[in-house]
Image 1: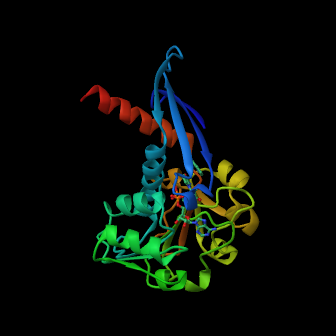
Image 2: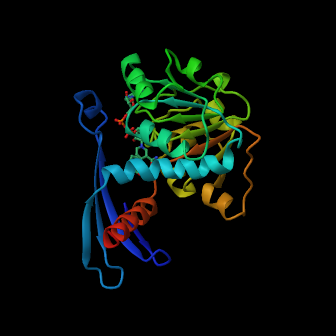
Length: 251
Ligand SMILES: NC(=O)C1=CN([C@@H]2O[C@H](COP(=O)(O)OP(=O)(O)OC[C@H]3O[C@@H](n4cnc5c(N)ncnc54)[C@H](O)[C@@H]3O)[C@@H](O)[C@H]2O)C=CC1
Ligand SMILES: O=C([O-])C1=[NH+]CCC1
């Protein structure tokens, strides 16, 4: 994933491979390395691990979307999936909202319970997606499922969904009815139309990129049911890598 940004003064690329079956072997499913270059002359400045950056920047992008698109009084969070992104999303979203309830569903009750114990007394492992999401103001889907796991009939009107998994054109995590029945935001229209099965297969209409909401050219319909379909963008890695280098320089 290559990126040059004159504005951010960064030239970087991330090599990322994902192996969903690694999860059951207890090794990371995403293998990522970042290379950062001097944008003035192309010389290599740093090679760094991309796993932590991928976890944190993805959750940070969802947090920005959620800040604009969720009801500001949101109290109930549901997380579907209990891996790295589940943890980083809980961490990032908790900087914006004081959740009174965090409901977690995963394929095994054991992994949902493990995450629930890490989070503490507000969290609960649920035995179905429906149980986890029915009271939720904010929902995060962070699984490796190839078929829909979150259905419109379970989602409270006005809820906000961060749909983070299903990053291939033939994979889906979200029921097409929910995709079509919500106001749909994406990180990149171009990316969504090429890579997101949730968008392509449902034929849902993309209303806006989150960046257009942030810069005020498109509306944030936080009183309606909203979906943020995230696929990940190279600029998120490049800017994060620059932050790491800045921190290194000042410590
Ligand atoms: N939009 C973006 O920028 C990014 C998206 N992702 C995506 O987020 C999702 C989660 O990533 P991580 O938390 O890093 O992975 P992880 O491997 O740490 O956790 C994956 C979770 O999905 C569950 N899972 C695996 N197969 C499943 C299936 N068939 N049905 C339902 N659940 C299943 C596992 O039990 C686990 O809870 C993946 O789809 C990944 O590709 C990851 C990085 C960036
Ligand atoms: O942006 C990213 O690094 C990824 N998106 C989906 C899997 C990895």
